[in-house]
Length: 290
Image (cartoon, rainbow, N blue to C red; front, side, top):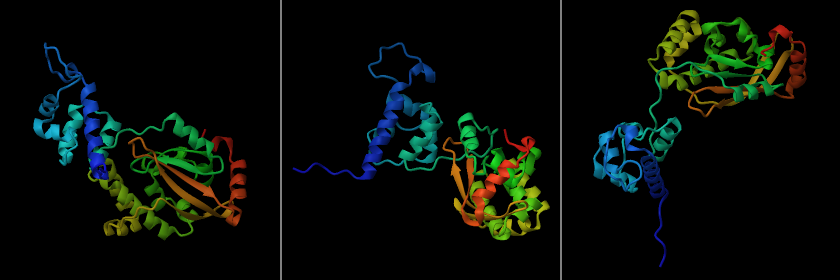
């Protein structure tokens, strides 16, 4: 007799139930404020206790752990995350197993680039690179970025923001050969990524500043174009090295911070690799990133 077949959806539901059960069994009643003087045969919390804390029905929660075809809402999943004291990684995992999109953070906290990412950044010797935060503020950069884009250390506040630089910095406008095309694409990508932060005061302040500072931004922002483009060629017109061609790549940092590592790799075209090395060799010590 053939073994019963299980769909991918069945497997996902069973894995969701097993994950919930494992988190429930590791959580002690005292950690959730439940007092009990009775000997407990069940490790961790009971199903009815999780259901009570989360504000859901015990039978319904039992079905969820059993892998039955129940479909928890975002609100219920959020309540379960709180009831089971899940950390950020566990919350993402729970929402993924449930086939739901985790609610995004609406406020931006202080962004910090940790040591391993800084080490990677500095190891990209011939590749100009920098790290941006959720609002596309440049948080860290290497010597190659200084040689091509200028010293971010000399900039403060909004002036260190990518959108601000693209639309208001004369050096950046001259540097980008196809400025209008790239500026439109950059703005469309920024709008797509900033959707999760609609209403955030820092975003709203930046947008208001750009509406006052750039006629192109003022014209294009209301058009609401969006694009999700993570790579492409960038043709640059460097004031010292002349024409250069780079391959551009945006890499997301998978730690929930919404930071990205932006890397420009020089190509053989226009002798860009040799030109990049010459620019680095000529970089004054005081302009270096480290």
